[in-house]
Image 1 (cartoon, one colour):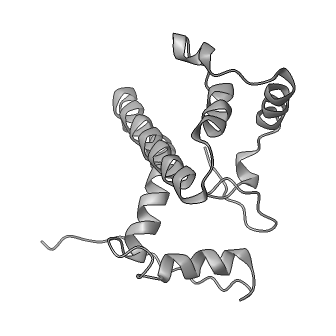
Image 2 (cartoon, one colour):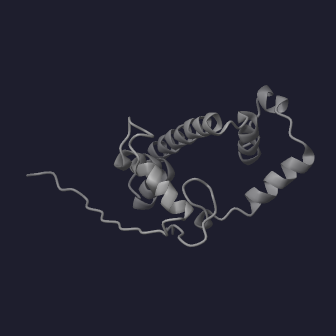
Image 3 (cartoon, helix red, strand yellow):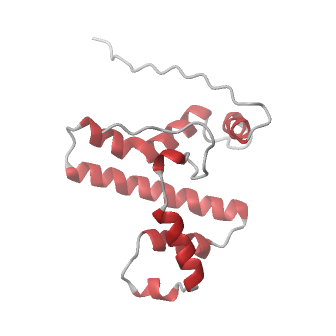
Length: 151
C-alpha cells in the first residue's frame, strides 16, 4: 500500500507593496538562503510555532512528548532570535530581558540582567495584553489575517 499524503493548497496574494509581500519575496529568494528552499522555511516556522499545540489538540500524545516538542520549539525560537540579533545588530541582552520578563528564571545570571523598573513595567504590560490571535509568526501585529486555535 502506498503512503497516503496530506495535501494542502494555499493561495495568498497580498498587495505587492505590503510587508507581507516582502516577507513572501524573501522566502522565495533562494539567493538569500541557499541552504533552505521555501517549503522547508515555511514548514520549519509552522512546526516550531504550531506543532506542540496541533498535536495537543489531536489528543493522543503523552504529556512527555508534548513537553519535548515544546522544548524543541523553544530551542528553534532561541536560535532564530540569536540569528535576528546578529542580522539586525540588536544587543541580545535586550531580547533576553523581554524573555526573562515573560519566563522568569531563578539562577544567578537572571539577577545580573538588570532592566530599569520603567522598562520592565512596559514589557510586563505588553505581555499582559498579549493576544495570540492578533500576532503573526514573527511576533509583529497583523492588521488582517489571524490564526484561530480550536480546542
